[in-house]
Amino acid sequence: MSLTSAAARRDLAFHLHPSTNLRQVQTDGPLVITRGDGVYVYDDEGRRYLEGMSGLWCASLGFSERRLADAAYRQMCELPFYHSFGGKVPAISTELAERLIGISPAGMTRVFFANSGSEANDTAIKLAWYVNNALGRPQKKKIISRQRAYHGVTIASGSLTGLAFAHTDFDLPIARILHTDCPYPYRGAHAGESEENYAARLANSLEQLILREDPDTVAAFFAEPVMGAGGVIVPPATYFERVQAILKKHDILFVVDEVICGFGRTGNMFGSQTFDLRPDIITAAKALSAGYQPISATLVSGEVYETLLAQSDKLGMFGHGYTYSSHPVPAAVALETLKIYAERDVVATVRRVGPRLQEGIRSYADHALVGEARGLGLIGAVELVRNKATKESFDPKAGVGAFLVRRAQQHGVILRNMPTDIVAFCPPLIVSESQIDEILAGFDKALGDTEAMVRERGLA
Ligand SMILES: Cc1ncc(COP(=O)(O)O)c(C=O)c1O
Image (tube, rainbow, N blue to C red):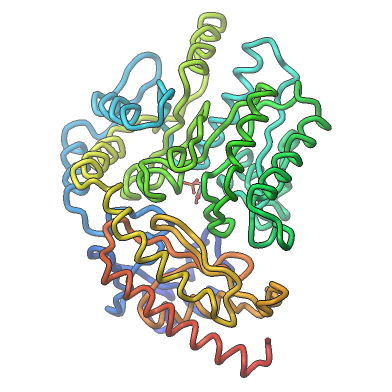
């Protein structure tokens, strides 16, 4: 966080930062992180921060899980690389596949590995297209995602993403990718409208879109159980039940993006279980390896797999895969991660400590700057507003949420600001109740600072 450190100056000279305001990092300097310990990380000047975001929603086991480092080292010594093309496979990747299918929601029978959530979603899009070609339905290719969704930034997954920053000047979205409403009770529901009525309205709007486009041209619908980077948005009651009925009616594949929600985050092993989802395809990444190694998974139902199998008979192969698909080192780390989740009963832990975070966040619901405090399990957000009664946001250019997050950082807690002025919380799943209190204390001070700043600058 300072331009005085040599590491920060070197970084600015050579590094093109991803998902960053490139001008601001030049003036503020990067936060150079040098080591981690439990839920804490340390910068190059020795300052300690409680990582309230698990890095990028991924470091579920914190930043010093020795067993994961040992698993990587052992695998590097034994078999540092092998691949899965043409019928070969590193033994460890088989073990991971079996274990992952073993804990995944009912109906998933095979898993394809890649390196990132974006690639997992790209794979799911390709599968939706491929399956419909295999079934003799070459017109059934459109994909529906949702406004505010975040599914990645590659050309296809970035098109699924429903946030302007991922599209503007990148010439996205590509053709055949459509966006339906975001299920956002705080901003989308009409005054006095019940959750169920709002959900029915959203489902109807989705069905109207499908009918307008022609159901015979729609291949798949993508959804995160809880939308993460779009603002930690929890859907209204009955939303997914209604959506799933429509997808079934029109024979549309349901792809559930579990990249954030997977592996305990929402209080079940998968968000699909929290919301009673019956996906055809699941994508997962991040906490699959606790963020320690890049790896993602695209899980497919028996029915999808049977179609791929038949098409392989016809074409001679399944022509999709990456050099690092099923790479043994991330596979070893992911396998160890899943063992740790089972041994430490990660789901029970989230259920035990989650309420502390949720109650803590919701205790700010009455604050003048807080429009809504929401979340579930160990993921949550506080949405800041200029006018609580009208829900009017601050001018995005005022940078109110960014200010709060900078202040929280100065108070030793890392949070994340998302448009517009939505402050996210997503601590490692190993966080203790007292560490949750520490996160909330940092937030509290930062909110106080923000209130003073808003008053001083006459923003509210
Ligand atoms: C729900 C969701 N899907 C997909 C992705 C993309 O993953 P990656 O950044 O590994 O490509 C993310 C990343 O934050 C995500 O939150």
